[in-house]
Length: 134
Image: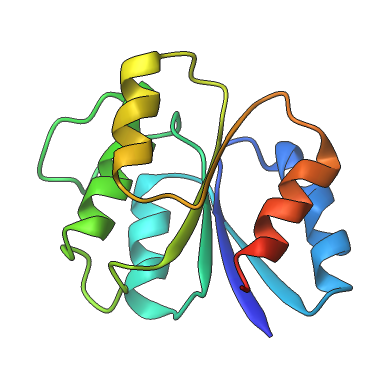
């Protein structure tokens, strides 16, 4: 079974993927914002992460984070190995509507497997997640 954590503040945007992925032996979990994502990554083992970029920055972060870049900050923490018990090399796809070329370049430089801009076709997201198994 492949375990995927979706970090997304608008669950209606990702829940449709869950049933399709579950048929292919994926276990899907949702984190609504920064604090919840950190807590889940520290306590659970995931094979992959689907990451939005703009979501609640939470209250537990030691740093001031802009909500529009909370996902980028989370990605940086993961890659730097600053989240206890989280594999810094976890496979990640980014699923976002943030239209900023500099942010996009920074995200891609952090080794994501796919960068998908919303709105994106349903089958492209499913395909990107299934490709994480390879």
